Length: 586
Image 1 (spheres, one colour):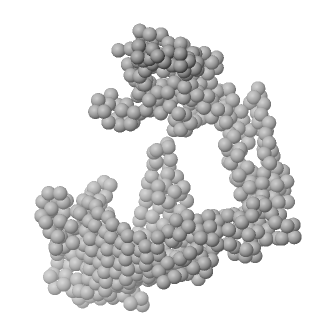
Image 2 (image 1 turned 90 degrees about the horizontal axis):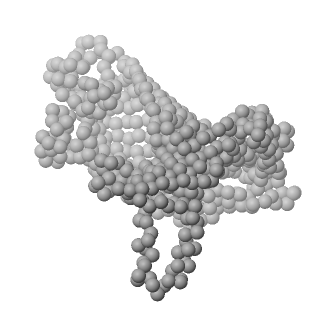
Image 3 (image 1 turned 90 degrees about the vertical axis):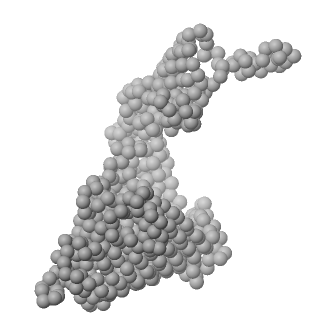
């Protein structure tokens, strides 16, 4: 087996290499293509005697890539900045590589040399002008292991930040506090550009659509100090004039206009253009949405308005959803859905959905899976029948305002809680979501259903102290349930689907009584509070915790000659069970 170690010093520009069996001169690499071309042209008739491919070394697989000494920039950032990449886990692990699976990344000598320059440039752009990058390359047979050794040194820090030309327009002190680059920070060119973009954003959200910023800086490498000047060029302050809509063919233009957050005669605000783009895209009727200025430069000085262009690319107005899965509490499950966008015009959407679970263990799909793949539900009396849910929902966006949404749905369902209860009902829901503040939507809704809730006799006796069969039958009769709910969400997360930083606060209040057409057994007030927090630990790791609590205040009832407080099983809070994190008993 041949092995060797190579060291490259970016400070001196030299290279040293020793390899058992055959020394190599890496400094001559840049001339190899020219020599090979000349040899191929001169010795073409002799090619069969000395094939060039036989003289070239086979490519090596990158089995390891690491960084040492980096503190200001993490490994993920450095890896993204270079061309040399390590092979996949199957190709790098000594215990798995023999399988032959996984993507193999091959070592490119020229790109590796360039990677040193790339890292140096990245560090200098980040404020570390005196950074030095060395490399250590270990070669074993057909494998190579690469290590970048980084000496960051002291950064150039920002000593002064001056904003000019905006004192009469903006609160400069507040603006300075909002900039990504602050005095005392390393002079990061990326944050410098982001600070200029922040100034432009402030101006464009205050009526200056053609605002710009002139940037200048002075760096003293010897003193490790930098000075920055941002000079604002606001341009004219303009109002919204004409709103031009293009690309709407099947969708009515009037429907699009109702969703716009930009209105004629309002002061121009860039964030309203972004909000309009999100609102239109969220309708599901468009493949792409672009909301931009119609003109790249201001019009005549006498014109105090600016035109906005809305470009649309329509998507199919119908969607079909099919899904299947397996869960320890559902056994096998399937779902399907059909959505019609712009249903009868007005941007409304019609959803028809159906779900079926407990497949394989519940009637009429009892195929004996309870004794094998769905063993968790072997002793669950609520899983004797398949669960289902069928719903038809009509959603109306722009309900009296582009920020409000209304929905109405009818449903039929059978659902069960593991070892607790079974609920069968048909009903309807209506709700309106108010988005007066974009970050705190509030939903007010009313639900009404007619159904019955049943439970195992042991559950009635143990948790509800109803051990008599006649008493249990009384509580399982078909009854009406009506409730008014108010819920609000305050999200401060960096991503709705996959948050890694921030917090999420949710509050839900419900009232059920005879005044909202609920049966006397369904009279209570219920409150629920949930708080989630996310902490980024690294690029790929997040620490998250959630706290959830609630309270139910039932009305006192006179039943069966007793004064009791009754909470229906389907409205109680449940903890534990096989679907909890800790798995403790319910």
